Image (cartoon, rainbow, N blue to C red; front, side, top):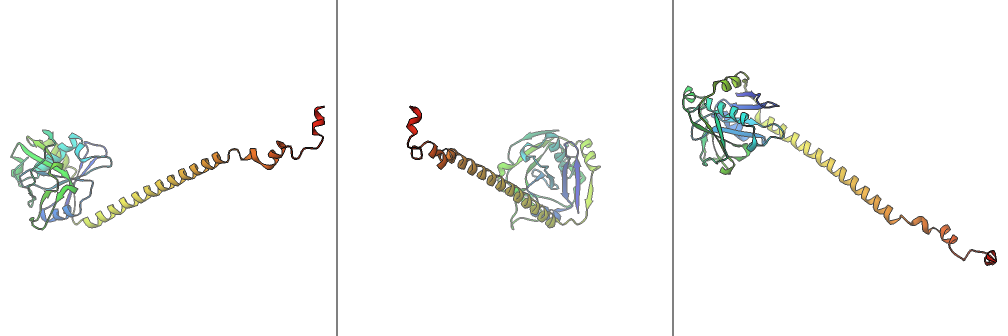
Length: 240
């Protein structure tokens, strides 16, 4: 089962999702999208929260109020941590992070916790890791958010948007998404090729026109008019 949330602090709204447990989270890790950003409480067990970015968004320049929503939701779904934010580009240590089954109420009690976030593409998973564990390919591509305390107004607002999907087909969703990405890329390539062909033809025509701009001046008729060969023998008499 996957839980979906909507953050209305941005327009269009932010699309947020989280797996029910660490087993389902394996599929989220495996079939994530390049547009996804992963959130987790640093050095504590918590849910893996994902933001699916809207077109044009960059993971390292997300609106602060959107990051705040994600951080509060992550804290609220942690085992030990929940609660105003200060952003930092400081990288987190490359240590595994594990999602445990369902969050404990204790997660709403611990203050001053750090939430880390990174692009889905930066998550590293290998066979030596336990279920739900990940590390990072590049620790420098990790940002940190200090959450001093739980903000019930944010958590309650997000919880009101919560929906559930029991058995989503993550693989099919990713395949469909990747197929659409390829279709758009191919369409853009065809447009580019068509424009390049048009420009090449235009250049060719201009080149031909430049090379043949004086062709009419050197036709046989014009040359005859300027030559003495076809003039009558008494043409000089005209000047007498």
